Image (tube, rainbow, N blue to C red):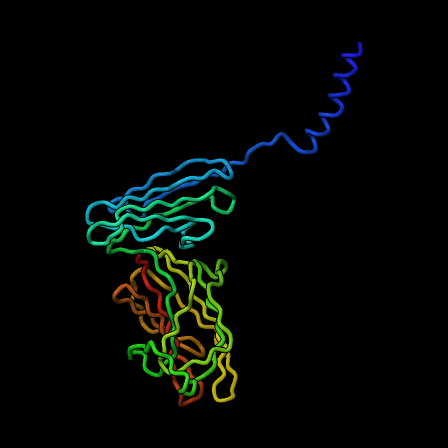
Length: 274
């Protein structure tokens, strides 16, 4: 009798504890691995994994090609950091022929990974630099001489995405003194664009300019297509044109600060390379 009472009391204690703390069920997440081109490379590591499980994805380049980068969810360049470890094997020509990506599976790291291989139809591009100039055909200058007076002061937010409703902010700068034709190269840009023949990506540069004490605002917009060169497109207070050459997309916005002063904001998007 006492034994039965003890078991009953134990049940009364345990059941609420199970209800309170659960049964310790382990969450699991899918990880999908794709090759940017099965002609140029293969991948492995697909599966469903438990949360916290340490896994390794592998990309192997085929003869004549090389590995370039890992992309997460078609939007973010994966880099060595506290979440990811990338190890690359190179050949005698210093080309990466094999790459492994190791990480712990979580809600943040689940999803789609693409191994990008080098080919002449590179679809992945990333914002690389910008400048303002009076001559869009002149080569940009690397050296920013602080002794020269700035051309203007610029604040800008750069957004990108497939549609105007899916734009995400990738770069912001505040009150930047800009000198004529000097290249400005942002750091730590990891957001990428995937360009395909049938779709275009939207670029928006919300820009505030202070020129000779006069404040002006421009909401520059452009569409970017795969390896596309576009004619000049007119808008109410600016125009734009896209030029593609040597793995670089130049988005050229032409605007005026007065009836006689014409300037060009040039955004450079560069194809991914190792």
